[in-house]
Each structure stands twice: as C-alpha cells, then as structure tokens.
Figure 1 (cartoon, rainbow, N blue to C red):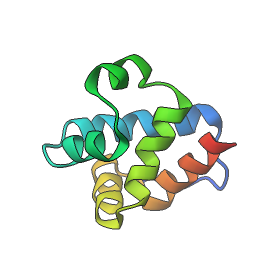
Figure 2 (figure 1 turned 90 degrees about the vertical axis):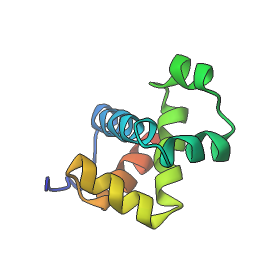
Figure 3 (figure 1 turned 60 degrees about the horizontal axis):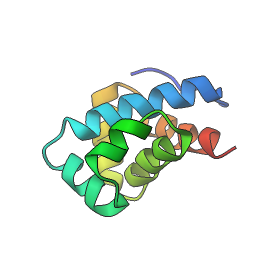
Figure 4 (figure 1 turned 90 degrees about the horizontal axis):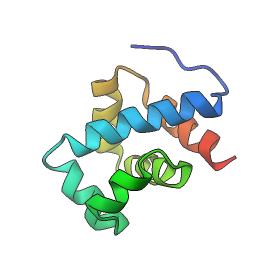
Length: 92
C-alpha cells in the first residue's frame, strides 16, 4: 500500500479523485448509488469528470460510507486517509 504524504498537491488530489471515480463507475453497486445520491447523470459526469467539484463529490461520497471508502482505498492500493486528504486538497 502506498504511503500518504501529509499535504497533497492539487494535481495529486485530482489524480486520486479520478482514480476513485474510475473505481466507482466500474463497480456495479457503487456506480448507480453514486449517481442516485449525487443527482448527477451520466452525461454530466462524463462532461465534468475532471472538475474539482465533481472530484470532491466523488471523494465526499466515499467518505460518507466507510465501507466504500475502505474498499476503494484497497482497490487503489492507497490508505483511506489519502482519499480524505485528497478531498481536503480539492476543497482548498
């Protein structure tokens, strides 16, 4: 598992958010739940996938459900705290 830097750059946070989004949309349970809970539709998600607001929504979605956060972190081979740190970096 990768280690966590104490302060992620915006670029690193965006990359981690994109990786998390890729995991979510590829998961048959998480993908539909993410769309339902965020109110985003597939077209909007495609068009704005790299925006800090969408990436923050992705990471916030994971933070709101610890099992999803832990499973996604494991799938991405990062500590769960890296995902929460990325969300904080995107909010700056």
